Length: 174
Image 1 (tube, rainbow, N blue to C red):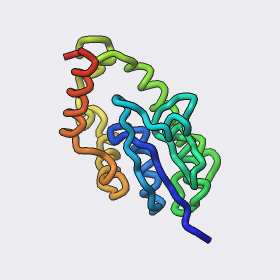
Image 2 (cartoon, rainbow, N blue to C red):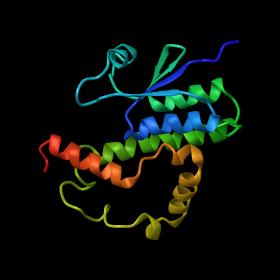
Image 3 (tube, one colour):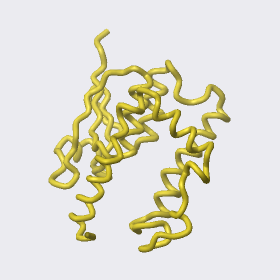
């Protein structure tokens, strides 16, 4: 049996792409990450693989495309069962999917196109530190960042900051 060809159409700063790459890394799967230029022109492969949304990530398993990070991660977990990414019981899997969906939809929706959660000014929701106000969450994040599968995917904060500055400039914000 030949080895499957796994490709992710990717943008290094996208948390949705990071989610897919972390899942692949956790499974110990070899894959090719093809960087997409989301600002200068999307590739024909991206446009033909995700004709509805034309967004990353797109996961290609032997040339067959899948879109949307949660769907891709579920597919990876079902296709390569070991080690499992989701709990073994149906209830645990439902809980994990609930929280992933909540983060994807509710937090992104609440932030929208605003600079801060309450608009253009920094305020109540943005005025806290995760470590002080949410120590369990902070410790969970630290444990995740210590995993090799995560550490090799998550970019350094300085690189993300430079990207945000460049993006704001492109949008005429600064």
